[in-house]
Length: 232
Image (cartoon, rainbow, N blue to C red):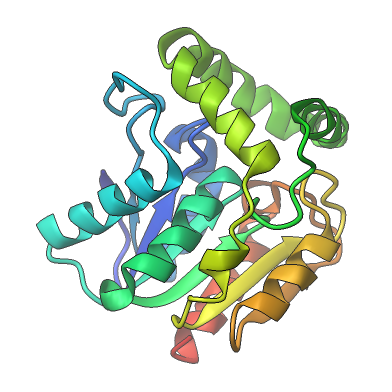
């Protein structure tokens, strides 16, 4: 866990397939507007190695345990892509310490059901995001070497998990922050998620792709800051 910035607390969950360093541009932008905690989950980068891969419910419990241990209340929880799924489950199961939930291009609704389909969509997105791809490649390769079983399990989860049952249980104010050019988790999935989560707000970055949280950090941080200023 790292901490930077001042103001209302924000907890960012990096995608478990990469790691915290990937999100440095987003963290820096958010830290100019809030107090930012970055929680790198077990089974990824510097997180603990797991004896067996975790399910999303276990990741959600880990987030809740960490917030309780740090006595953090009324936080805005941000998840991106795969960590968005963990954040969504956290919001459904452990809403007590959250003031808001931000899901950025999150997996979990209308999954492709095929790992190959997911990988192909992700490959196209990566070709459209060369700077992001170069930035994430070392982290992903490290995870594949050190956290192999977790990575393979998480890829399968990303391709197959349907969190509709959890989405309808979310009562925390929720922001869906999506890139219009996202091919990995297209905008239609955001619309499906918006229909499921009561009162959720959808904001679309016209030029953003799947990873606009990193590629367009100032724009993303502004969207989050406005959401927080409205109390969710």
